[in-house]
Image 1 (cartoon, one colour):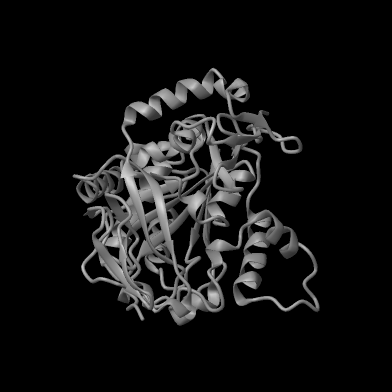
Image 2 (cartoon, helix red, strand yellow):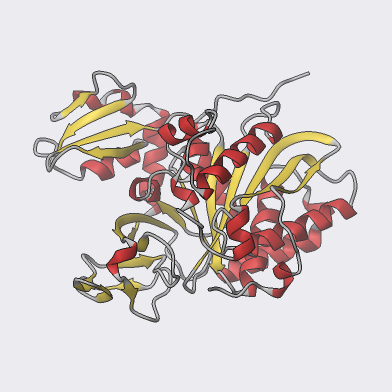
Length: 400
């Protein structure tokens, strides 16, 4: 079990609404999700620091800032989860179930917590000033520099650029059901921020720095009013994420079950380079080797979890610039004319791709256009869908 940092431990009971601050002027709404995994306490103390500074300086904030806690029982016990991973529940069918009256239905602790979190979100988040910006705040069980994960919409990219840390794209294809994918589908801007190792005090500092940079970048605070906090935050982020690839794409997830007896070899850390065939871990079936060369991500060094590790590879920034142009000129409306590509007969913005006909870099090309892989029907057929709200969101600011 991970140690809780003393600064966080002194906070006793954690409530669903950790704190909120409404500025004297209108502006964007920022919502932080803290502790959706119960052994990740660093973000909770980071938001307390930010709120303390905001409450001490009146009339220096525009908009609304709110922090919500995710898995309250798991946070109290300092466990990743009680019954199941709360950050895998946010599929449309599951959300529909949770919105119903659950009397008489047996639900897990995490399902109950997700239902309560949905109610809190619906109560606290409004759309008067456009889409809310959500930051799902995490730490990892291995040593790590900070990075940010998001569904690859241009709206998310514009916000993510302000953190000055590596992007990790494609994680939602490897692990469906994350809360940030749900948030993005609802029309908001949503990303997950990974600050570092669970019990490293620096993770609190990095989470705090990320919050100050986010609030300043979207106009909630002005640089002149928070000079010390912002100067410190820029310094922390610049030193925390140097010498790393700017953009990475998830290539592979090693999924595990509790009965697998999975054991990661010691010493791996996020973004460490590995060679094809390198021994990474062992389980009841023997050695687990790297399927290709790349950078390892989130190697598992905690008791609970279904992700042994991820493999990523760098992407050149040039391709993201190409992607932006292609999306603005709506190349996606023409791709169904390509050989091996047909429109889905029932689902809007969805394509069926025969990879034996459309052979070359199918997933990579469609990623550039804003599609993501939903289903691998068989060895040759893939279903891809384009995200909604790629460039513009559904919620526009109200004008007086």
